[in-house]
Image (tube, rainbow, N blue to C red; front, side, top):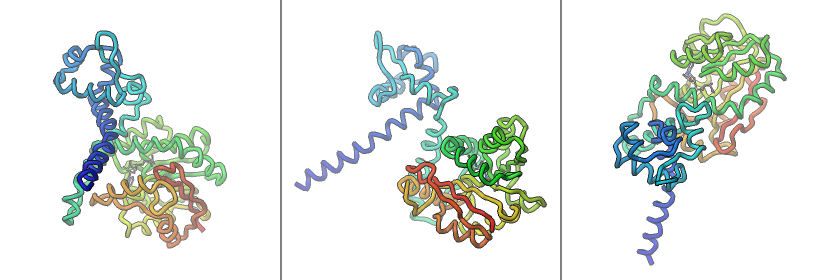
Length: 328
Ligand SMILES: C[S@@+](CC[C@H](N)C(=O)[O-])C[C@H]1O[C@@H](n2cnc3c(N)ncnc32)[C@H](O)[C@@H]1O
């Protein structure tokens, strides 16, 4: 009986790992633009020659693709990519989500794989900001779909005359506010040079993006604004420095000013599987930091004179929340 149980357990582990193959296959296809290559039916040999790829390895990738349903075999055994993959996993498709595959396979999974060594030492991996800043800014912007409407509702309700987005990434929230409320004075602050440059391009030069550390920016800023957005930013700040961060935000806010945070929350009602994985990833780095719980945010915010007025889930399975605070 115990031998049978061992066999069943081993088999279950194997089976549960099958899903990984789907992501692996899509990632390889995205990296080498293989779905685009097979957007028209062609033989494996032809594709290997055209794209200068190893024939036996390409054959194996195709075997997997046929199994996981990314590819299909047609007339004379020619291979064609399914339309969905050409659309969503080709780098040059305007609807591509392939960058998310890159983030998972090149950033998250390799970090998790280092866990055994990390657990046995005090060492942490360094998050390579220059290498991944664009990837992270782009994947963060996928969240906008769920978050823009509530942010616009907040703007409608609070009627700010000026808004600063700290750690604005590609500036998607600023753009959405500008399109709907062109009179509001908007600015973005983005520490990464390439990301800040791309944000200005995306914003057609209509909104200023300061390529600066938001901490320095606020230190030298003498004005006040009515609203601050800090979306997907908290995990760049050590837990012990967060009270200070709230104080910095309070410094630039007018009385009764509003601040919106978007962040995955620990100890929340939704999305704790994802949050646990994300938090594991964060904690493995020396320059990324754990996700907050709502209680921690309340307490840190309170110390800087903020009151949480709303906390609603944006993407339940991801544990992503929009937390809105108001300066007393
Ligand atoms: C995860 S992205 C989120 C982008 C955008 N806020 C969003 O939610 O789509 C966080 C951005 O904050 C930037 N950032 C991190 N620390 C910063 C700091 N101290 N000052 C300004 N920007 C910062 C990063 O370079 C990155 O582009």
